[in-house]
Length: 81
Image 1 (cartoon, rainbow, N blue to C red):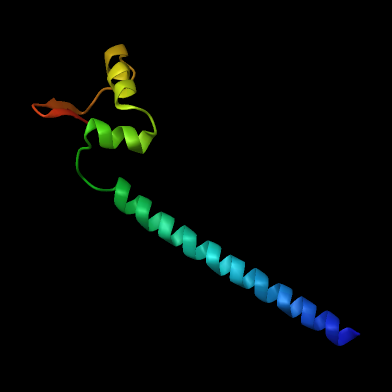
Image 2: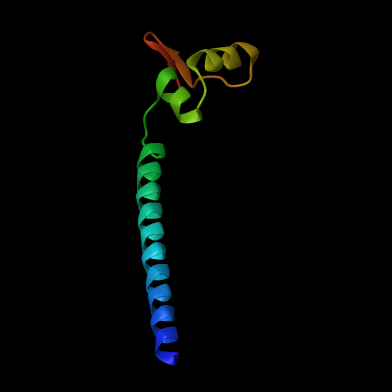
């Protein structure tokens, strides 16, 4: 009877190790993606920046008009954040 218990515990521990390893792997991918994405030293177009924030481009224009958020500068080809 004791042998079955040890086997069950060992399988459970191995399952936890697998899940933990997978979670760590996913977090490393997420970190690498967001680090590269957010640390680029470029200006974003209004559409790119709206996708980052999860709002529409029109919302960014409204925020600019209402004084809530201003673009870094406005070039001849549009807003830059």
